Length: 121
Picture (cartoon, rainbow, N blue to C red):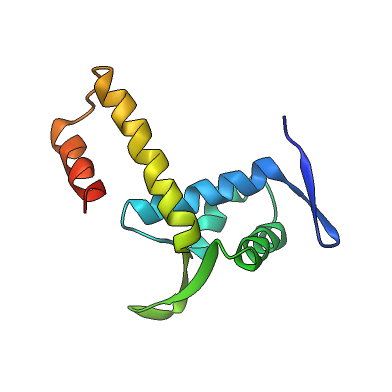
């Protein structure tokens, strides 16, 4: 299932790119954007810093990711999904949560309610 995609002159693994994208989106939707350095700590077993940087460059070129200086520490870079990426992700995660909850799954009623209230804003 792991396939390569040609982006410009490089070949990239779709699976690798999806892991990076998912991590950036999940952390953003949790309200704690991930830093470039922190993201690298998760993926050091899978690929090099250069490969991660190329994935992020591709995502930035596609308009789904922005690198933003952390307002509390300008030396740190936060990885923020653009509205093009964040809105569909919110809908997908809310749909997934709705299916789980309608099936009777409740991992923490307060957390489920908090997530429901965030999605209706």
